[in-house]
Amino acid sequence: MRTVENALGMEIPLNAQYIRNLMMGAHATHDHIVHFYHLAALDWVDIVSALKADARATANLGQKLSSWTGNSYDAVKASQDKLKTFVSSGQLGVYGSGYWGHPAMKLAPEVNMLAAHHYLQALEYQREINKVVSILGSKTPHIQNVAVGGVANAINPDSQSTLNMERLYYIKTLIDKVGDFVENVLLVDTAAVAAFYADWTKHGSGVMNYLSAPDMPMDTKGTVFALPGGYIPGGDVSKFTPIKSYTDPFFRDNVKESIKHSWYDGNWDRHPWEEDTVPKYTDFQDNGKYSWVKSPTFKGQPAQVGPLANVLCMYAAGHEPTKKYTHKVLDTISALVGSKVGVGALHSTIGRIGARSVRCAVLYDTLKSQWQALIDNIGKGDVTTFNQPVFPKGEQRGFGFHEAPRGILSHWIVINDGKIKNYQAVVPSTWNAGPRNSQDALGPYEAALIGNPVADPEKPLEVLRTVHSFDPCLACAIHMHDRTRKDIVRVKAV
Image (tube, rainbow, N blue to C red; front, side, top):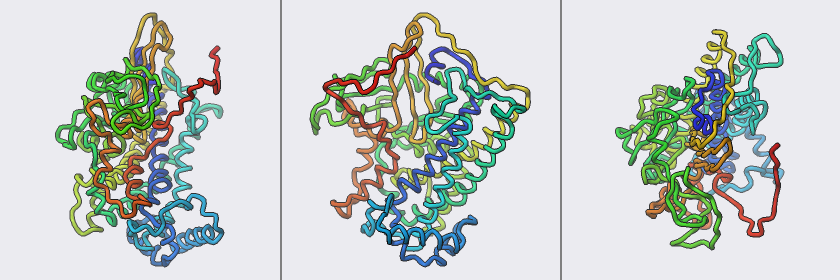
């Protein structure tokens, strides 16, 4: 949608910007909670060890670390009993494939139990924040309200069939409820895990060129953003260059993709507007093609994207909420380990996980301000949510970007006489999972794995820790190719 709007030179109504921002912020908050507790935490937390914990000691630890009301003895004991029921039934479900008892696991039973307790509580809070997306987007996933030119939400404070004040204030209730969990549980847990695994600040840095998108536009043209973005070369935050607008040539002109090591026809480095995507599979070749993923570059170099890149760029830009939450996490870690831990520790596997919780807290602050901005604008009598697009004759080129939960997402379009001539997407997991580029420089996953310890080659938990810290998206990095070209489904546009 932003891609087509950019090609057409459109402005977007403020209400539409705020509604989009609320959905994106709520979706990313949901994603970050799920990633830490339900996707990555069990790389560090031993569920079997948690069963041996003293529930009262666990509750006392939780109350020492945070004022969270959900850390009572009764609540912890109920969670432990639930885990014991899972184990005794033999139906472990999501806990069934963990590397329990692995030598790289080193949390005390009570710390494991506290994290397991919050794992179960997080199931409720990720569901609550996702309600914001469903209220505004009609459903989730696959929202139904976004269109080129704005959103389909009609605003009428006096109507029960539109976006009204009742629904808007319910959204605020959900934001505040989940924000309490993010600030008092998620931030604390990630700091505690990082403190116990402080040695992991030495592993997994990999590519230290960081790229992120500015997001949460606060004007109709996409030139003012609540969240800054840009580029940091070589991990040096003093060299941060901002991306200033949706039309900024600094971003537009510096993105390319290579297929030298990818299963596509040819061997080229091209700008997305000039790309094609023609599959040509070979067997895995050590020095040839070995991946379905293309290799994106920025200014000719691989770049790491995701919450770490986003947090470092916002920090470098002087964004106060980012600085506040970054220092809150680092100060908590410092207190737990007994020595000063600085921003440099974020260039690591455990740093990526910590940065994701920082970004989640920043999004909570941003959601509050976006909600207020929407309320204030409606209060001025503005209820416009959509501008009609007009497709002229001839060729138009556009690009749009968004700081998705896994990092910068950009789409590139060439339109000719109102029809799509070329369309390419350069997605977060492509940036991070890309194979070697045309200069044979390693992509972020590959580079981050160099030097990782592996205690048991048959159970490479440490490899999972580093790869999971990027939050891989399989849908973005796995493709199927049918050489027989058999139709799966055919859609006719009318």
